Image 1 (tube, rainbow, N blue to C red):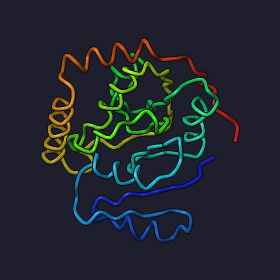
Image 2: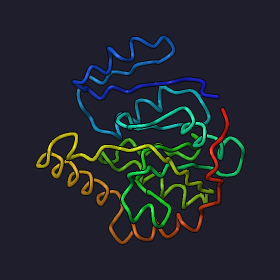
Image 3: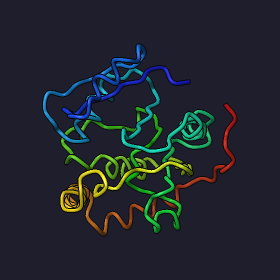
Image 4: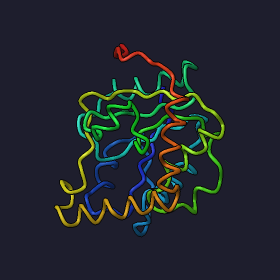
Length: 203
């Protein structure tokens, strides 16, 4: 089902290139300097060839092939036009309403995207994509990823650096969409959400 795998190394220091080298069918794009998530996504998307795109953050814990399959299926089966993950450790409010509007794991058609996302802030991509989905009235599937967690920034960087990283991300998001605009965005996405089964697929 997955035609190509591309890993974008945003000038990391964690040995990403060495790990990728062990897999013959994985393509590595190594950026010369750290440019942020939006730039990394731009590089990966431009290098890809498929009509459907699957985006996955690199730091997930507990991710399995079954989770990936369950995220892809609503789109390839035509039940939705974009699928968004809802991780087990997503903030309580997002789990309560059934939507993590800044989740980095998504499946969608390349045709949804415009060209202007290259100029977005480092962490503005997800809310930008949300606005495109709302404008195009795409059907949104939210897929619960039980057993999958994304480590909080204070766990990755320590308390002080983690708080600073969170603040930078919040500022980038607010530079892309205003706080009131984010509230409207969430409400409109909930209206576009379609029901998908929580029953795991068989692979």
